[in-house]
Image (cartoon, rainbow, N blue to C red; front, side, top):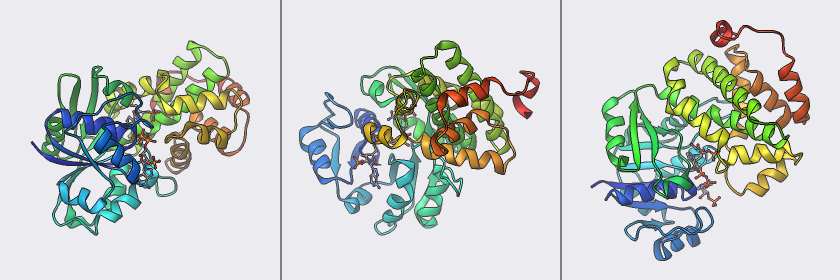
Length: 339
Ligand SMILES: NC(=O)C1=CN([C@@H]2O[C@H](COP(=O)(O)OP(=O)(O)OC[C@H]3O[C@@H](n4cnc5c(N)ncnc54)[C@H](OP(=O)(O)O)[C@@H]3O)[C@@H](O)[C@H]2O)C=CC1
Ligand SMILES: O=C(CO)COP(=O)(O)O
């Protein structure tokens, strides 16, 4: 049994804390809201993020970051990408020994282009970091808490650290693989949110499965092109954290990115959509990062560019779809990797 703190009590942090508590680990869930920590600790619910769910009574919660830090030497980092640096920097005041960090957030920071594991390494003092293992894959919280079979990948260049995380989470309904390619895993997990926004948009426009399949397939091509240039293993992108997560996020009604895209496709404006979601939509900031990365690495990313135009240049979604369809003629396979 390990002592583990989960940082962030949204849907994903809560679902993972539930898995760990059910696996018998001494799990403490940290929320930055006192009322939410009390609700989880005493009522064993988190109605705002996972309605109608009863959490294990063994799962404890706190809003006190000092206590949350003292509790554990393993930290699951489940706050949105935007909050990673702020939360991790605060830990430095309370950490006393090296810890294992497990980021589960999926995003790339605009302008710095840092992956989540890199942001953690830049925020937590080096003497307090043992290893960083990214946990990513096709896994909506809403299904995990129902014990629906879910597969996911623990990624770290240090395979034994990834195997440690595999052992923490693995159970009958939650199957964990390992991968040493943390770059590919984190890039795939972040960039699939961009394509899921686009898939939601085409659904919102009233287009069908043909358009969705096109976005998933050509989306994977452009994710792979960029990911390989950034140092990822090409095979990672056809695995759980690439193709797998792309499928689930582009097709599931649980996906926040797909749902936000769907509203955009129906003609709603970005600010209104994000306000209505009430949960993090990582793909918006990651579209900005991906757009910048495409220029930096000179990689052709037409879907990303189209989404950037919709989100940040106020272009009409339908016009951008039309432009994608009328791009210059291409060969499919030859240009998959080198377009
Ligand atoms: N939901 C899912 O199924 C999955 C999500 N993910 C990833 O996990 C990450 C978290 O997603 P998810 O749980 O869905 O997000 P939610 O929007 O459900 O929850 C985010 C949580 O983080 C809290 N938070 C926001 N800002 C801060 C801050 N500055 N300091 C402390 N806490 C903060 C929020 O608090 P408040 O209530 O105050 O806003 C909320 O509790 C994302 O990167 C997402 O891509 C990955 C796999 C599956
Ligand atoms: O990453 C996820 C599922 O694997 C969650 O995606 P959304 O943030 O779009 O809900």
